[in-house]
Length: 283
Image 1 (cartoon, helix red, strand yellow):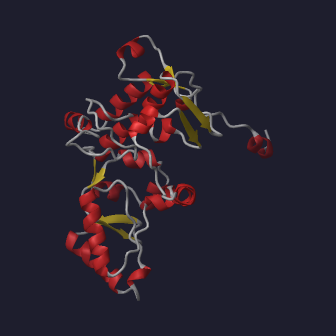
Image 2 (tube, helix red, strand yellow; image 1 turned 180 degrees about the vertical axis):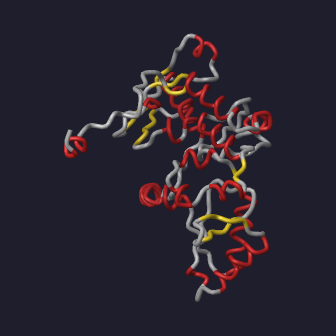
Image 3 (cartoon, rainbow, N blue to C red; image 1 turned 60 degrees about the vertical axis):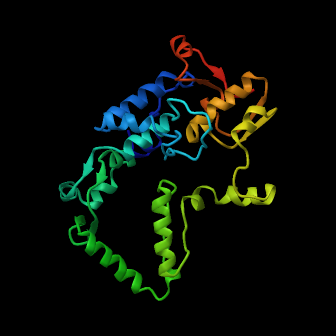
């Protein structure tokens, strides 16, 4: 076969068709695999049971709010993955970076990189060896200070923040940067929500959601526009299907036909799981 024909050959799909509902046994099995694969199963089980609980902590998986009611399990498959990998016992130590160059790490998938674990100490890049090497905390702070002091203006620095950071860490971070002389804080919302924030500000006057959980319970109609709750906010599937069950109209407008916007099998409903049943999430 010629090179031209080889290039035109249709590649074999790397996905398998799925005909089941969102959630269900697939989600339960996936949660179990990530929980056991964290190498810290007992501790992480206790952590998952504190996720989104009163007196616990907010799940780092997404921004879906917490309802005032407390239940034993208030996390989804995505949230369980996030908690288990934040608290994994796996460690990326200096021996790891001695074995892998930065160029070789760039060839790995995001999943593989995350699976290796958490950093154990500060690292600095050595261009001559193309490897990260350990550096003391004092030297790390001194190196950062050197670069910051060499800038003509504090406003030339960007201090990227993350929605995954705790409130305490975020407070200390912004305090440090403001003391340095700037408030240049681009964060994950600039990348994910800049467009929606502008549109919402123009249409409803504020750049974020204004509904509460009680609104879902009493709304006669719910419109889901260009959003994939089964992927981005799986905990939203429960109030959507409850709304359908009580007679509300749930309308979805989305170029992607996502299974979560069709039907949902609740992993916390024993009868539904044992009978392989499910409920619709849209009208």
